[in-house]
Image 1 (cartoon, rainbow, N blue to C red):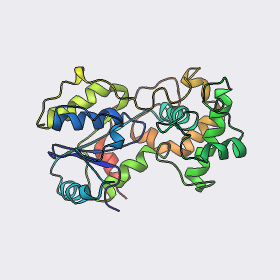
Image 2: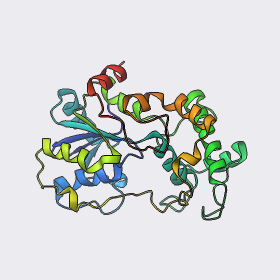
Image 3: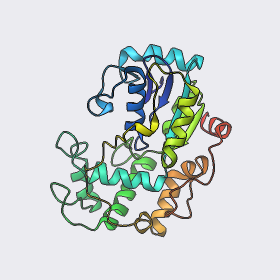
Image 4: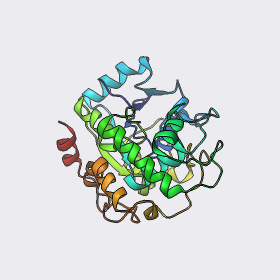
Length: 272
């Protein structure tokens, strides 16, 4: 199994387990910058050099060796499940991707046909009932995660605890898990614990939101998208995410966590 979704600086100053839709583009660019003194020109997910990634075969041995020996500071970042799934919907379902096409080819037509979802027309820019469509998408997301139908779950809406657990199960340990909502404070903790070839001034780092502009803008407050049934589905899919990462399930309007992450609890509950 190894360490899927794991990135490491070439200097081995830090190790990061990617969780999609949780500031991963910005974190990847900070890691790249901390080694090279410049940002990767383009989406960091497209880089094939300058940053170790498990998906690159030559990176696997160095990552595995490092993680199993816990040589470097290891961390990840989480986000409120309500805003994360909304972001996935507007970016991946309604949005046109970097290559000018729909995400995953035939997935959106399947959703339109089987779940009655609207996505704002061919270019994602026409008016449509965002709330009704999102709730239908949530049903689809639940079906993929619980029943693996009509397809396997996608990394952008599979649970954060699922992503985070593979690192632990295969022999890794986290030193820090922080929140997208308090990004600078959390990332500063990482930088305070590592020595990088190039110093990083977080205040001067831009935000690399690669999904911004792909899809329509969210037209309503977060809480408007979640009625009782939607919240029931959210609990069914993301119960562990709410509990382990201290997010407020009862109030979708509150995007902030209610407390710090207990690393011992995360390792105990996700290490089975």
